[in-house]
Length: 434
Image 1 (cartoon, rainbow, N blue to C red):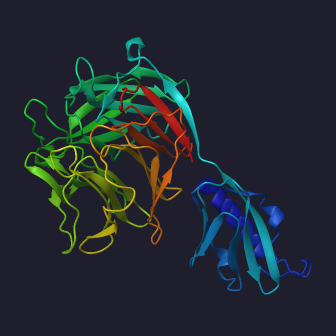
Image 2: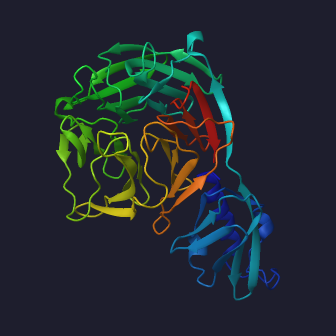
Image 3: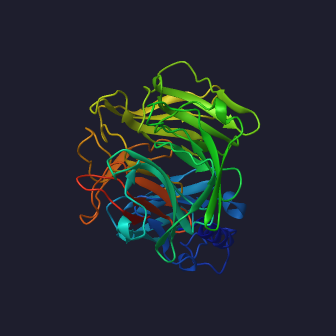
C-alpha cells in the first residue's frame, strides 16, 4: 500500500471513530469496517496507520490481529506486519468498551518477473560485474555504468553508460562528456540536484590503487556530463565500499571499504561546501574492515546497516556479521545485531536494495567462497526489535548469481535485479514486486 493510502485510511478512520453516535449499533466501537474495504499489505511488509486528530485522543481503543499478521501499537501510530510465506486473508481487530470492529486485510505475495534479457552483441550493454546502477528521479529510466566486463577477458575495466527505458524495455547508449572515470568498484548515491549522481571510489586496475575519486554526473536526455565534485582530491580511497546519503544531516557518508593500505571500517562524511571529514565513533566493539559488503541507510531509525563482506585477500576471508551504526547518538555508536556464526552466513558481492516501505534490507545471492553463488534472497528487518534475517526462495527460472546489482523503485514498489555471474554471465533485468 502506498503512503497516500495510509492518509486516506487514517482520515476515514478518524471520522468514523471520532465520537459515539446513537445511530451506531452497540458492539461496533463506532467504526464501520465496510468504509475501508480490504486493507492491502505486501508479504513480509509493514503498514503504518497514523493515529491523528480525534483518533489520537481515543484511549479506549486496542488493536489485535487474526491470521498471518501482527500488530504493534505505538504512541502515534499502529504498525501492521504481514508474515512471510502466506497470502491468506487476515483481520485487524479494533476493540473498545462498546465491543469490537473487524477490518479485513489482504496480503500480496512477493512476485518475480523478467523485465528484459538481451544479447550484448545486438545493441544492449555488455555483461559486467562491480558496476553501478541507479534509477532517475522520475523512476522512468534505469542507468548502468562501468564495472568490469568479461571481454576480451574477465576484469576488463569499462566506463560505458547505458539507459534502460522502463516503458519501452529498450536500452540505449548514453553519450558522455567530461572526465569519465575508469574505476570499477565505485559506488553511487543521488546528488544534491535532480538528475545528478555522485560516483565515489573504485580501483585503478593498472596500479591496483584506490585513487581519491569523487565525481558529479549530470544526465539529461541522451547525454551525461562528468566533473570533479568539490574537494574531490581529498576523498578517501574506497573499493566496493559504500556511499550513503544521510538525509537527516544533508551529507554523504563513506562507511568501511578497501583502500590501497588495506581494509577499514572508517566513517567519513562529505559536504560539497566543507569537503571530507572523519566521523569519530564511540569506543567499544566495531566491525572489521571489509569490502564487498551490503549496506543501507534507514532514515526512520537513523541507522546505517552493514552486512557481511570480505575481510582479507583470500577468497575464504569472508565474514557474515550484521551491524548498525547509530547516527542519532553523539558520538555515533556501532551495535552488532547478528553474530557472524549465525544465519544468514558469510558472503560478499550479493546484490542488495533497501525497501523503505516494507522496512527491510534485501540481499540476493553473493558468494561465500569466490566460486559458488548462494541461493535465495535474505531479508533483514530494519525496525528496532525486529532486526532478524529471513530467507526467501527465488523462482527456479531466475538464475542464482553473485556480483549482481539491485535498486528499489519507489514508484512501482519493486526491486530491479540484474547482471552478475555464476557458471554463466548474465545480461538481464528482473523485477521483484513487493
